[in-house]
Every structure is written in structure tokens, then in C-alpha cells.
Image (cartoon, rainbow, N blue to C red; front, top):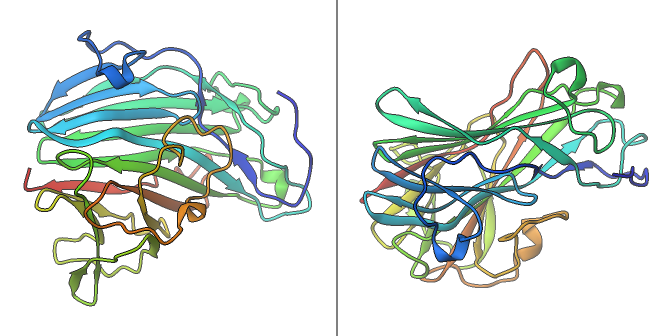
Length: 302
């Protein structure tokens, strides 16, 4: 891996994984994902998990109580690391993140977790053995599934980053969430505003303003009764994008810069096939303070 040009741009880190998925079960995967995948059926969930070429761990073909929640699923196309010293930063480059393996653990009797860890050193493109003295970037990707329909989508950031770039960096994480509630198509996107659920007609994005529904949710995708509610982490400074699904807009290994804003072009997002993007900005992530950005998803009427 060669170092990219030094220019006045933020440092880009793409979650690229090496290795193979830990086998959790052995039934045949869905046809669309026949090349790889592992299967978990537990706590009302039916989940496939897989390794992608550049987008971290993907959960896909997910069902809850027998009903479809998502097909192509949830990935992290990009982690962008921004440093305050813009005189010594790098153009984007792609890091081969050391893939330790996907692991499953039970969360008591109420749920289970799928997780994978990615580490690399301050040598450009150099994987790390996850020993703190050798590691500059240390991420733990987590999906926490609960029997009551909650799904916590998190990325633990252990830092420390490159402190010699003028201070602590800001980590900007993108999650792409392709919810196909009870199947692709016929989906609606709503946001809580002015004391009611509102239904924007066109593609857009919305800032977390702390204005949540009585149940604590700010955005949701539904079809038209079963729904996936999105509850932003209050310290994420989150944005949520509601977009019309198009092949090629972040749905496959995205080994390049991804900006969902570029996909907003005035298309309708009601009663169609939609995709949501969640963006979190977190700072003060280092060896002493572990940041855990990401949304809480809650299913209803399944």
C-alpha cells in the first residue's frame, strides 16, 4: 500500500477486512449471497452475516418473527477521520484492516451479539496485531440483537489516532441501512417533527434535533404498519438520509469515497424501495475514552 498525496483533505479510512467468516451454522445461504455467509437463528431473529471486501461486516437477509426486516442489510461503507491540522493530512487511501474474525456471544438470555475487530498501525496500510503499542486505529464493529425487537448498531472506537496531526481527530462514520420491511418496495420514511410523524415526499437528510416521539424515536421506515424506528445516539451529532434505492449507490463494496448527499436528486421516497444512511460524528476517542457511536433500531408491529 503506497502513501497517497498530501493535500488539504481529511483522512479517509475504509473498513476493508481480511480473512474468512467464523462459521456459526451450515445451512445454504440465500441465493443472492451464495458465495459466503453464516447463519444465526436465535431470540426471534433469523440473521445472515458476511464479510465484505471493503465495508466491514454485513448483516443481510434478516427476519424477525418470520417477517423480512432487510435484504442487502447494514454495512459501514466509510469511516472518515478528520484532523484539526489541515496542513499535514493525507488524500484518501484505502487501508487493509486486519480481520481477526466474526464472533458471536450471548447477551444473557435476552439476545446475542455479532462482532468483528479491525486494527492497523500508523504505518500507512500496515495491518496491526491489535496490541495497543502497535495499533493506531482500533475498531470493534457490533450488532446487538434482542428478543424484544431491538437492534443496536455500534462501532467501538478505541483510538488513539494520529495525535501528532494537531490534536484528537473527529471520527465520521457512515452506516448504510437497506430496510426492506416485509419485502422490497412499498416502504415509507417518516420523521418526528412538531409533535407528529411527518412524511417527506422527496429525498433529503435531517439533523438530530433531540425532538423525539413519546416513545423516543426520531425517524422510522415502515410498510405501512410494521416499522423500523431509528433512535440516534444523543452524542453522535447524527444525520439521517432518506434515499430512493438505486443499484450502485453504496450497495456493494465501496472502495472509494462515499457521500450520500451526492445521491439526493429530487426523487420520491414514499411507497417505493428506500434506503437509509446514518452518519455519526464523534471526537475525544482515544486510549482512555472509548467512543461507541451508532443508532438503536427498534421494530414494531412485526
